[in-house]
Image (cartoon, rainbow, N blue to C red; front, side, top):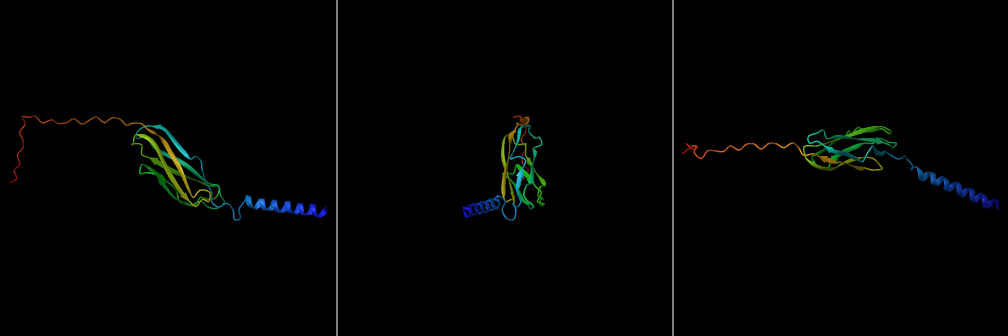
Length: 156
């Protein structure tokens, strides 16, 4: 009976040690990217208004996070990101500028590429609606009188 209990206790100890090893990988977690939000909603925004928004990135890992690229889904969405390493526990800001001179719905993506072990490519989104701009008055058409003389060309 003592041998059985000893074997049982030893097995439980061994399995407990294995479970702890699985909880935290050897060598740490590496750089981890966490964002304050996945979507920025402009709501309804005036035509020509400031279309800038920010996403705050935090490195929740145990090694430096390096953002290598930020790319908008079209030319009307321009992201700006710092490529300097973000130390564990530190933050950086990704600024996104949308061209609000384009009336209508906004539904654009920004892809953030990094060395993060949890999400090497993270996609964030901007959405909303840009109001129609002020109507530009039609330029008056200059009508020529039917009696106006026609200029003749002097080239031969």
